[in-house]
Length: 239
Image 1 (cartoon, rainbow, N blue to C red):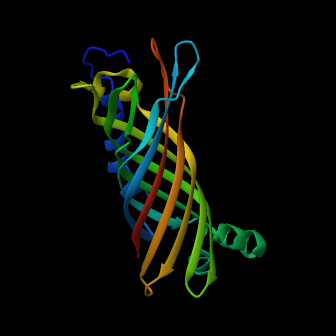
Image 2 (cartoon, rainbow, N blue to C red):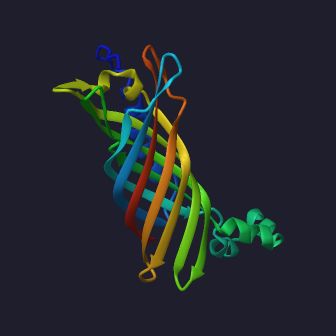
């Protein structure tokens, strides 16, 4: 891969994440706070300048940590207690209100290590990266048995590289100077969550999230897409 001179352009993504982190806690009041930790297993998909897929990259694991706020899209209990136009509207449409009450959305801040390893012509290499960013998720969650919940949501993430290196043979190259890594990245995908109520205010959960990067920048050497799968466990604290 080709490397570039140092640039501060990648800091735009960092400032965007800082702005998001500053505004999000005040924009909405969380109905629950979720903290999770686990492993991110990432597949690098590199396409060279001739459009050929390179298959010498192999998945590698890294750390995944996330703190998120979760909300019910339509809280029917709170809605009933209000005398507003929206309360009247949904009281006249109980089926619609019930359907929307199953939907939940979350906003979160996260940290990922999106790594990869490989070898070509008996030369080993590895990529070690640290990304920070945010996530947005929306989807239904159902209670199916004695406090057990199952959720399936669509996920969008924004990620910015803050540190990273490529180890090639016996030399390290900084990925913060590589346009294929230091540009702000957008991911989309899905997440499956299984949770169990511990008590009235605490739930334990396990998640599997699969996403892929979108709109990867084209460089003189080709294009790099990332497809991380995160497997994590955590707790949710109700407000």
